Every structure is written in C-alpha cells, then in structure tokens.
Length: 131
Image 1: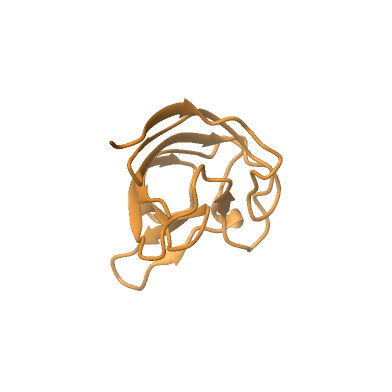
Image 2 (image 1 turned 90 degrees about the vertical axis):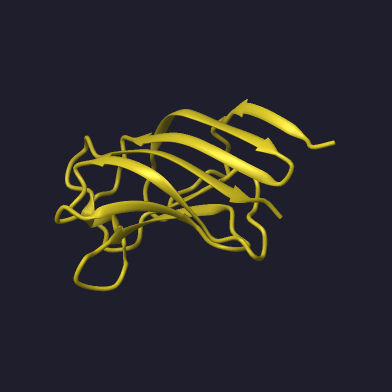
C-alpha cells in the first residue's frame, strides 16, 4: 500500500537559502510512495546583490540517489534575457536550484544578483523521487 501524504509545509529552522532569507506561501507537498510533488510560491527574497547561486533548502524529503527532476516555474523580475527558468532537484539533496535554459549557451544557475527587484517571485511545481 502506497503512503499518501498531503500537507502544508511549515517553515522550520532548517529551511535555508544559500544567502539571506525568503518568505514563501502556497507551500504544499503530496507524497505517494516515493514520489514527492511540491507546489511553492517564493517571494520576498532578502539578498539580491550576492553573486552566489540561489538555492532553497528544507525540502520535505531528501531526493534519491538516482533522482534528476525538473519542474515548471512561472517567475517575474529575474534577469533572464527572456530565457526559461527551470527548477532542479539533483540526487541525494534536500534542496532545489533554478537554472536558465539559454538558447545560445549552456545552462546557467540563477544567482541572487539575477533577482532584479524586491518583487521577484517564483511559482513552481516539481515532482522528485525521495530516498
């Protein structure tokens, strides 16, 4: 019998981003078996000047060793030159990153400095395989 869990994500002390603080809302996940689907709106990002990558920690479950998951993202006020932004969960992590899919070069990680306004936001849905 598959486990089925649907809950609101509560902010915990372990929730982190690479630099600074964030606020989020509409944070829900559903877990069926080992598949976790996360829905999240990230807003009010404090640090928009550092050149480090924008990484969000504190996912509800660590990803599996063979996980490679991408998710749909709607965003605003991101310096992306009109390129797509994609959410990414790698293997053996409890965090997610954002990548720009560029037409003329390799993928590029979204950095804090790419967030052009205090109104920068990400709405996303991503499904990944839990460990």
